Image (cartoon, rainbow, N blue to C red; front, side, top):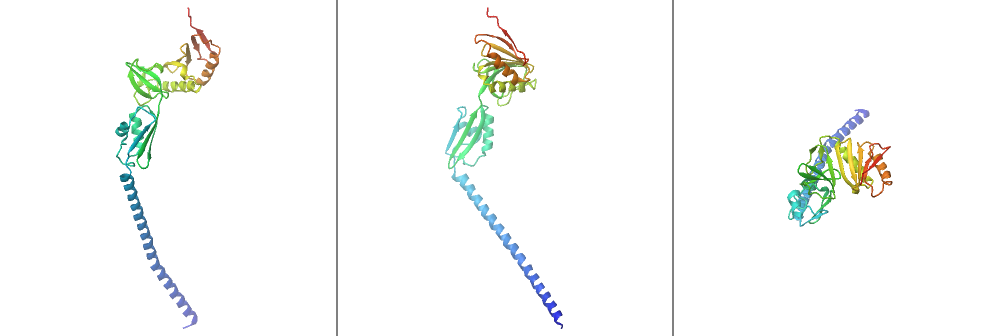
Length: 273
């Protein structure tokens, strides 16, 4: 047989041997990978089971702390938030508990539920501040600065420190929700007015707010000045104008101040005779 043919046959045989070895190696590699994946999953499952046992069986709630409010007790946290002594420390969803407690207690503005290993749950609350009183038929509704309804009390029993709000027809006044009016944009006008007054630190001296409609807004100041804004347009400019005018009105003076035109105000003193 010629030498070239012999070499070609050897090359073919070598190639065939390599192919056969690769064919045997691939299944072995696949088996090793599959085995490694199975072992890894087994380890992960075992660790997960271990931590489930540790966090649900070993860590039990022994102490529940409520910070920032006297309106809500530990018993309330158990009833409305599902967090009670003796339960698993990680046996409840913190976010769901926060939502349930906020719904049950309208005065809650912010709430945070935290866990501390091995046995403590802390409920930290920031309360809404009552600012307004809104009378609807035979009840007074206590409102926050954002016009959220915090509480309903019998008419005439709300604190004198609150700002009395008199408005057009109230559509909905539900504890825990924002008040709404038949004139839908009226709420936005009231919010803008209050945010502006509060921004200039005037809120503490406001006695009342009247708004039969959003184009006819008044507020009382220091028990002696009745301020007419008209609509809420250019509210910031009107309030800055108001501050400058008050620098020229004597402390003992009372009267009506018309600010409906932000460029030209009219002060009409009351007849004290």
